[in-house]
Structure formats: C-alpha cells, structure tokens
Amino acid sequence: MAAYPVTPVRTVRTEIAGIPRTITLKLEGHSPWRSVKGRTALSLIRSVAGDLTAPDATVVESTSGNLGLALSAICRDLGLRFIAVVDHRQSPVIQQAIEANGGELDWVRTPDDATTHLQDRLARVRELERDLPHAVWPNQYENDANWRIHETWTAPEFDAQVTHRAQALFAGVSTGGTLAGLSRHFRRTRPGLRIVAVDVRGSTVFGGVPRPRTLTGIGAGRRSAFLTRASTDDVLLVDERQAVACCHTLRADTGTAVGGSSGAVLAGCLEYLYRHPEVRHALCLCPDLGDHYGPTVYHPAWLDRMGLPSEAHRLRHRTGAACPGFEPVDDITPAPSAPSEEDASR
Picture 1 (tube, one colour):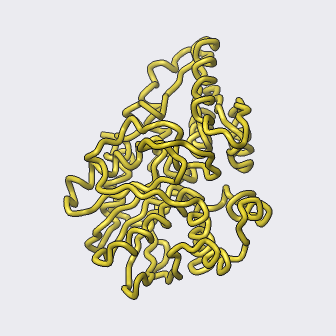
Picture 2: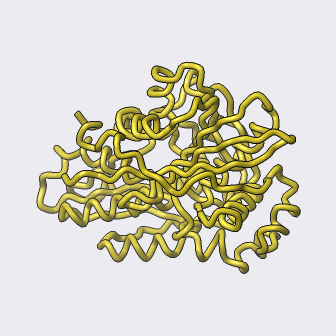
Picture 3: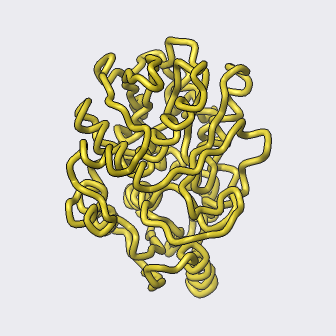
C-alpha cells in the first residue's frame, strides 16, 4: 500500500480567564479519506481480510458517516461490495460520496426524536449478516483492531508533531477506539499528560440517560467496549450548541473549518481550560474538517432549526459558551519525521 501522508497540525492561541493558552489541533480531515476514520477503516478491513476471499463477499457496517465513507473507498479499491447501514442524521454530502464510491445505503427509519438510532442500525446489520451469503461485519464497536491502529499509528504520529510540553489531550468519543488507542500510547510516552474524553449530552458512551442528539461523529447510544477507567483522567459533556459555536468561531478567526465532532472537542477543551488555569498547552484530535458539513453545521437553515444564528459573533454570544477568539500561531504544518503507516502496522 502506498505511503499514507501525515495529517497536519495547526497551533492556535487564545486567552481564557485572562491567561494565554496554546492549543495544537491535529487535523485528521486532511487524510486521504477526509477523517480519522480512514485509519480505523484500514485496520478493520485488515482484521477481517481472511473472511473476504469469497467472490461475493460483502462488507456490512453500521455508520453515522465518516467510517462508512472510508470503508466505501477501501472496498471500492479492493473490488468488494459494501453496504452502509445509516439513519437520517447522516450528512447528505457523505451519503453521496459513499454512493459515488459504489457503496450502498441501507436506511433505518428511526423517528427524529428517538434515542435508538444506533440500536436500530445494529439490529439491521445483524439481519444483513444473517441473510446475505458471505456477509462480513467488521464491527467497529467491539473489534480491537479499532483502537490498536490509533495506539500504533495515530498517536505516535501526533506525538512526533508536538514540540512543546503539552499538559492535556482532548479527543471525542463514539465507539471510543480513537481515544483508547491515544491513551495507551500517551500513558507510556507522556505520563504527565492528562487524557480528557469529550462527549455530547445525550450520549451514553459512559452511561447515563440517552436523549436525542443532532451531531454525528461523536457520542453513541451504548457504552464503549474499549474505554476503561484508566483510559481517561476526566470526561466532559458538552452542549451541541457550544460545539457549533466553536466550529464557526474557529473558521471566522483562522480560516480553518472543522466538522461538528471537532467543534465538540474544541468546546470541551475550552471548558476544561477555563476550569484549570494551570493548563497552558493543550492538544486536540480533530476527527474531520468542515467540507462534509455544508448542508448542516455551516448552513443557515440548519442553524435556524437548532435555534442558532448563523453569524459567528452572535453564535459566540448566544450559546453562552466560553468561546473566545483564536489567533493562529503558525500555518497548517505536517511533521516529516512522523512514522509512516507501514511502520505503524509492523
């Protein structure tokens, strides 16, 4: 497989509670598959490669968006049929991209206000796995290949790009695989680094009562199979409106547009920095960019349905979030010394 380019980082400066802070963003949306889920998808497919030898083998997976897009591209390149089991919350841009890659969409018609989107998708995946000959479910929710790739590849790459002594790392959770892998690596290499999980209210990754959610790519309707008590030092639940406000503020101030889950990570980081004045340098794993969110996070009609104004300065004020301005410290910069994907998989 060709060398996988290093995803870049960008450092921004902000001021919270009168204290200058520095935040390094790892922009996974610059990967060939436009999100961190490209790494996950590669690992998942490798883990089930032995089951994909039949001429009519079909990969089936439940997805809220980015993993399905990455799997569709990989399956296209491998000549495999791919079925993405999705619900109505998925971005129309991602839907079109999956189909452009030759993937098929299998819709679960769950009501808008339901909290069972994931459970309904999983039930449909099990039906397809039972009914289709040579159907293979990589199962991103329980397959250890999910977190291992981030321990051996994503985390070492990010580690090599960090030039300052960071004090806290923030990552969003859905299956929990990305954070679990990051945590395993950084616990060894930077034992003083605080590992903070960011989730959205209404998610049950860490338990609690589910409630309807709007953003995709973060949160889930079940507990993570990968995260343990030792994986994190803290868990922050953010409001989806704060996540959206951070997306717009970052774009307005720096020109970098990130996706909704990345906005949630940034919102959690800002909240944590407000509570912890001793933390001056932070790291954020941003799963994707904003190019798939034109019809949602960055669309005035969608914002109106959320009860939010479309102007960044009004969003900042309306949400009541600690969402100060951002000043770019440097350009988007990859680190040529970061490990290649081939090195990471050995």
